[in-house]
Length: 125
Image 1 (tube, rainbow, N blue to C red):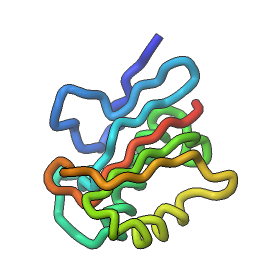
Image 2: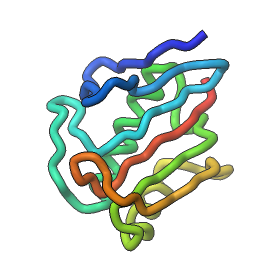
Image 3: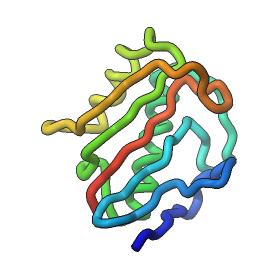
């Protein structure tokens, strides 16, 4: 069985996808960008500010699904510019503790709305 997660107060998806799906004891969080959850707007900023907003968005989705960042097992990070890796990683490190989730980080050719960062993850329920 699978169930969609649509947190109240979150920005609505701009395409046909769910913010997250719960299935078989895991929560699969779709790629999240640095959207303001109240307005759904994107305001370009520093990579640090955008990374923080993405994690706050992911955090609210996980909480709506009955989970948390502490239960994340896998993260995929997509950067517009791999040169932002160090600055993104500094913010990333404030959201996780050891043992850290498995992670892949790549430079994407382009991201929606020209985001500097997009992040998806898988967490345990």
